Structure formats: C-alpha cells, structure tokens
Image 1 (cartoon, one colour):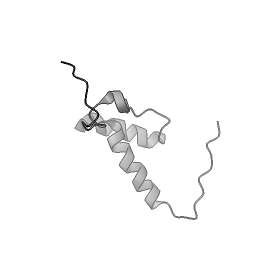
Image 2: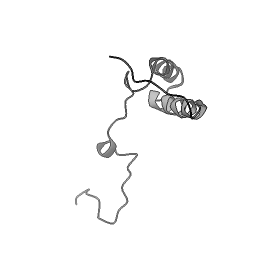
Image 3: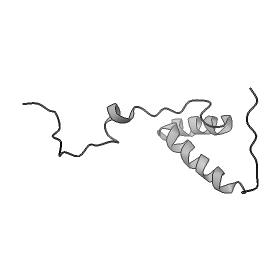
Length: 75
C-alpha cells in the first residue's frame, strides 16, 4: 500500500518542509541590529530567529511616519 496522499487529502503546508523549505534568517535580510538581536534572543529562548525578526520589522514599519524616506544602501 502506498503512502501517497489522495487528491482529496488536505496538504499540511506548514508541517511539510518539502513544500515550503526551511526558513533561515540570514544576515542581509534585515538590518544588522535586528539580525544580531534576533540571533541572541532566539538562542536564549529557543525560537527560530525569523520568528523574532518578523515582529520587529512589522513594529518598525508601523512606527515610521508616512513622510519618512529610507535611502538605498550604498554598496
């Protein structure tokens, strides 16, 4: 008997890493200060660093006024 799911079976998109891949936070995806904090905090409380960085990005986005301009980073 095959373990293949039937066409009518629901797919667990969050439990099967073959569908979504492993979400790793890498330096350069967020500002350095956020990356360093997320790495430090995730090590202490045992979470994925992305789970800490995403709320920080959302909070920063809400705190920035509409009129502010963020310049592109010079290489």
